[in-house]
Image (cartoon, rainbow, N blue to C red; front, side, top):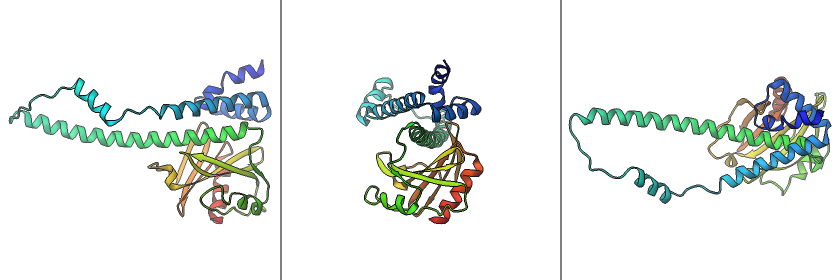
Length: 249
């Protein structure tokens, strides 16, 4: 019965619609319940599959042009001094609308990126094998990525810090390979994603301090790479880990 009450909330959890307290409670439950973790992973995979399929069917310019001609047939232009002010006003409104659309598209792109990163983090938490290279030694984890991703990176020295490196694996964003590193601080797991900036397209997330699906996120760029630190640990913990990674870079 207890698991049924949690599984009813998984979709809202993945969509970022749960209150923060319930989201953190469900996150804790997923760590200790293999059945709910497997169900969460299944729904994440289904969500990702729907997103991928939905991008395959984008109307081409010719189709758009045919639709526009069918709903707005060409009419001869009639110009006069009475129409010119209205036309000028329309142009101003059109430009303002285009600027607004551009801003909204940028925000939508950022939100989609954060949602995809949160999905990857949740999938890692729910997996029975969260990492492909299991080691607390940075000198073991870093060389493992050689030949698997098209870039290299440095890992921080964690001695005398509250963080422990658990391992890493290759993750994909926009079909581009990158590194996902798993750290633990107390009872919380934190994912650190590293991708080439070109994999992000036009997304702008530099120096971002954001939240995604009730997770805290830190983000920055350095030497052509973009770093994301995401987890349900406190903002202070994410800040400390981010500073250690930046110092190592």
